[in-house]
Length: 79
Length: 414
Image (tube, rainbow over all chains, first blue to last red; front, top):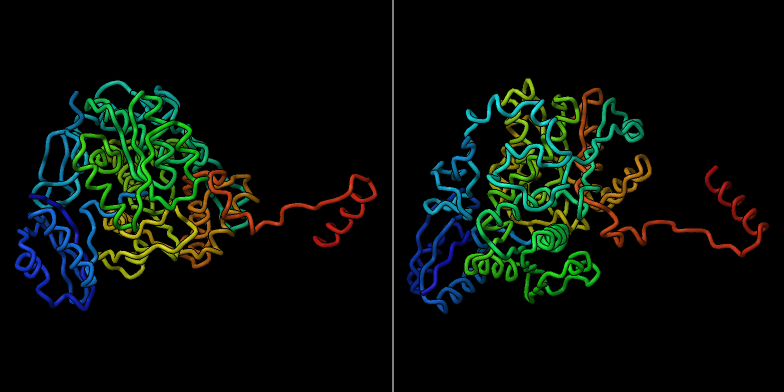
């Protein structure tokens, strides 16, 4: 089992979709929201993910396909 | 005297003991060092600071270090220059350059944060330090690790030009070039920091590392005779420097070192990567990540960790922000070099150009005091200027040839 702390940034066109619900349901990932700020046209969520390593990788790839920006909780660490 | 209470979450305020950790386990907010200012008041005075060494360590009581200084004994206390020539050019009455392009030992303000981070890493008992960087941070971590006899791992994107890594490789760290997109490399570094028990200076040591930036602010105030300038213009990448300079000014007010924290903080970013300035200009507390496209590589952070806090520091101080184009950045570099004899990197060009724009727009009144933060040296990345400078006149080895060339040059400039 793997555990990750990520920050998801949602584009306007995905705000109304149940992305986090689908991430849990379709990839068997336990999601745990720790902090979030979701506005009408934009939003971010600080999230803990727990699941099998391969499911986490597949889930993150799916999020990216959906246009959701997936960053580590620290955001940009290359400076 | 116990000056440190430990760490505190910047979002929910939950306290933690002093440890190499950086994220609140409850809300995932960033952790910050928590000081007992009551214990520091009266003990940290202008005289006690003046009695310290000519380095950042004269402010050691205000840094999160309990024991002896391990590395970077000569970091900081860089010149604050009264920039008369540049002031004349920009039409401003009182202008200063805080010049960290000559910060010892690796010529950028990163030496401040890294010397604090590596000293703290030694206190925690680490034998290995690490970072992910394409430039100044890598130089500084490798240099200070060498000085402290620590192992170091430096992660870089595999497509980084070889010339950029010489200033890191010379200290003989383990350099790991990672293939992949920026996001993939970035995520890997975060995972490495999570898995290995190393002091990743800007990840698990970040709360301590970031405190080193406060010394940039303390020095400005002390070098002005413990006076706060009306304006400070700061280049922004991750957003930590401007946040910590503002924190330093407020601490000096709390400790009675200055009368009042009366400085407006102004953020400078490139137009091709300016998410913090965009927040300021649109008065929005939501940071929208961007994909960087600018020659100011040392400021090219598209999703800055401290963006929100930088925005808040600017707003709290009554300051502003300005974007600069690549052409304006080059103009800013050349202007500083031509007027003050200082060769700064592109980040310095951003700051000079942003200051000019803020003065021209009347946001910074011309009769008020201004400090421009120059944070890195141009000699590390001269390539940005190669094609933009008229280099030389070529002549035969004859006096008559020189006479003719001189006459031509004079006719061009007259």
